[in-house]
Length: 233
Length: 223
Image 1: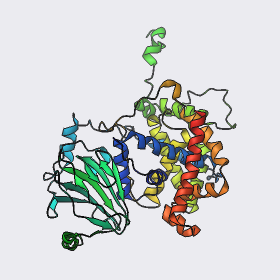
Image 2: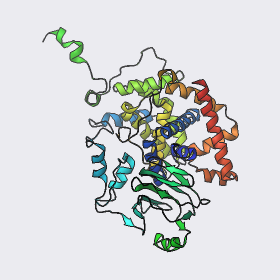
Image 3: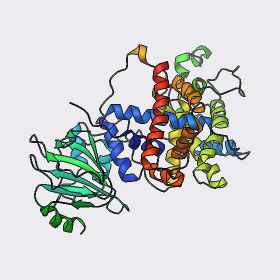
């Protein structure tokens, strides 16, 4: 079965450091689950390294090195960066600890997203959007983007919709299928304003996705018009 | 106390990556080949060696060479991304401080030294200039799906890759090189580049893709 890796231009913008926080979150989580995309990002970072190497040096102040050494020498005995508290023993436990009480995910959630979920607070829970879809807002205050965890009930269809901007969807658990194929854990679907799509969740379990939209959704079906009303609330 | 005991290698040996020794013992000059040329070209392999030396223990001399080579380039990168001279200077110093502190996390099989330092500089500027966050994966996260092992005969050392890339970048047609610089060095999204150059977004994307796939093919052919 074909994998749906994030498009190269998204990975390149991530490597160059030009993506906003919501899309960076999506890409970071995707590359934790897809080694091939991780390698692609690494290649694009190599290009960044080569460009850094080729750039014309700008002279530093005369005492720059000594200043940095002075700061190093002034350091208290340090614990190396990154090596902190022991992680909980198993995958399920780590995910459970990070998730708000009202949000259940069986599959393990990789680190960057896990931290964002934890930060929604233990009282957060799924908000039902009517029918088969429930959602949890992440980064609600980030301008210009809507970042959500979506849960689509197993086997159900989500209302037909198009987009003003682009919608990026990363599957964390379960799967969905639309006209462009089947998307499973780690896969990314990109739908732009040209696409009207109608994903159907797989039968195996509820489908849980991280969805980042850079402009609000427009529902197009008759039921969608009602939903639009709620989406913009 | 018996002198022989005191000079016993084991009694005095220092764990390879001991941070306690690094901070308590102060700064010791060690590790580097005393005959190393301090002014010659810093090849990718040498840069990776220097980072490894820094990871093994506090090595002022190794750090000084890395600093001399990379700090001015990091500063130039930050200047192009919109930092004033003073801010670029300070951030470049910050970035080099991070190089010292995190040298033990550098893995030469994964990245060339300049790639690794590029990612440090990039993250500093996202943080300080764009005031945004950049979620990253945690390499120690057990949730990460591991990569398939590359057969030994297909492995190209990262620093070797870096060497090839460096010369390939220099040989790119100017039009493509410019797009790369706009993307990597000027914080310009593909759509902003398209607006500024008055080109359709699709053209910008396809030219960038062309430039990048050219570099990639070149690496794969050499591998």
